[in-house]
Image 1: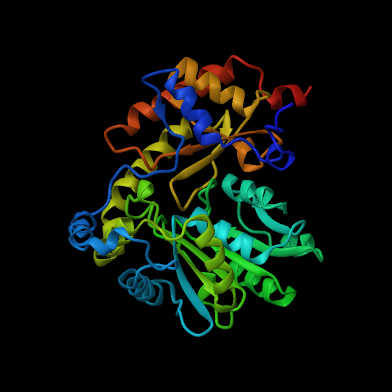
Image 2: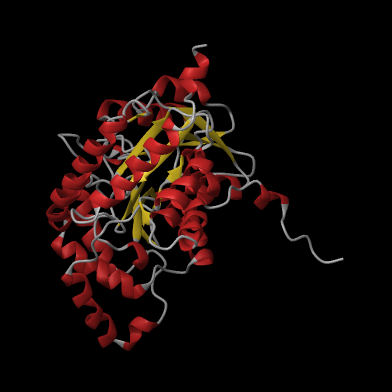
Length: 401
């Protein structure tokens, strides 16, 4: 008899949805993906130019400091100070990671023990929920309001003696909601009061529209000792495959985080760290120069979706590059996703992977679309939803009988 193939701990972890949908797309060539959360552009020229600096020194092919190379740490500290109002000093430290996802795992393992609880906002980011379960902890989902915004009172009621952290993502994946400063301050203060960590995922910090403003809880006076801030270059700088992110942590977690990262990674790819230095030389203006195009695509997406408002709710999404549709149907979300791919050649992500198990939700991602490709992609989605849903009895029709 051989070893057990599927340990019980991993059986409890949901199957990653992005590879599953990607496999479905491969079976149906020509499918347009409105699934994965990536941008349509690549890194700035300055990032690519820095590769020659990396190659010029043979020492760069060796392991470097676990927490990051000095030029990048200096650039990140300056960015955090000027843009986020976060000052790395005696109370906090900056650690370069292989993306914000690894930053989250670092934070999770540093602050929890087996059986501890971590509060997530529903809809949550699936990789956060998966990591919590993998770590032997319990994710505690707390519902947001009808606009997918924070409910601080509900979060407070969910706190138990086993709670170790509260996670917020703003701008939000998957809903596109941008949490208000007042609500984030309230959550951060609640964490301080209860002796919890506030894990603030800010990977989409530059992606806001219509006057919405991003706020970093790590900028709150007195928050350094209990706030963990996560950032990424994947979205803003088109760095998805380069795997560079960073985290700001309380100084007393630095030793633990260094142990964890040294075990899982050693250090973020050094060539990518050098490229990141070049990207930060351009700064947020690089993303800002692309944002007008993404905002235009967003407008087209919302305009097209408006034509099927009788079939689905399209909440205002002021950030990131997602729209989370609530669809009026008895069909399961994954069944609807599969039909859209098979019959209409367009892929989206089912809401079940974000913890939305009651009703049918679909996440539409438009970051990878350009003004040239958005028309066909959204046309397929609108046509597919219209045809499938009008051919099936909506939930509201049956409930009203």
